[in-house]
Length: 322
Image (cartoon, rainbow, N blue to C red; front, side, top):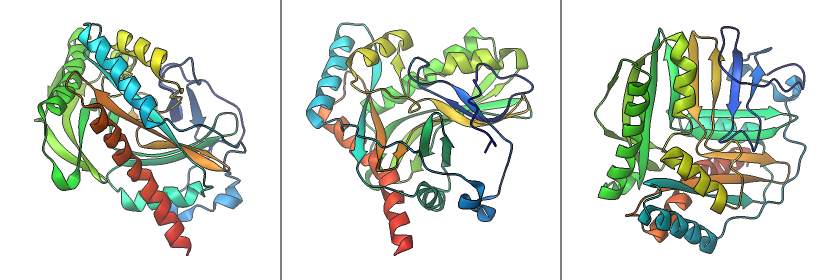
């Protein structure tokens, strides 16, 4: 945490950039900023009340995306695909849960339930409060090697059976990362595509290792974000479509976040499986990748399945108190 309420803007990584970066999906909705690391504490030593960490003072009254609205969004995306305007786009929705939560208790529950996810809770008095448990690495940098991944496709863990649609969806993300690295003339290698579990769902994942150079680190971040896994392809056209037809702002959903220590170490993750926290409830942000082969009802069910990640953490936090 930082000891004051100053909003420190984040533009590009520099040698002196140290703290926790919070970057939105697009910059015209919310500001990218960095929480200065004035104070660090180990989880078991945290006394939240003594530190003065509090929930967002703001109350919320957002309207959930209903199924009809979501299916229409999917239809609009598929019409654009049929016209040859795009190959893929991500349709997202919001779900308002009018139930006050203690974000620290939900955070601890999520840490226990999802040991392989990047679990976070951040609060800034001028921006608000967000909590999440994301399975997707954006950029992790250590010892001059940057790691990223192509993560897409969704199946329940108990019945994984990848369709051509999901394989294609993940392959498009692979191709984008390869193109970015090739355009920037970066040396890279990639793993085999494998099935990985993230809570109650499974994804297809390919990992990439990139020989990072300081001079090309910022262009790498700028060209990768937003990835096809959270936006679509081609990026510019998919983003235009999302802005035209989605009725909510994604804000920090589908952005990236995590600790940064100059050019030495980055641990940045794509902000998935996340929620915005208010005093009287939370807003869950959920999405699904749409291609020509998508079945709209199935995509709706996918978003409902993804909502269970944080709902289960909320339920566990309630159970631990009773």
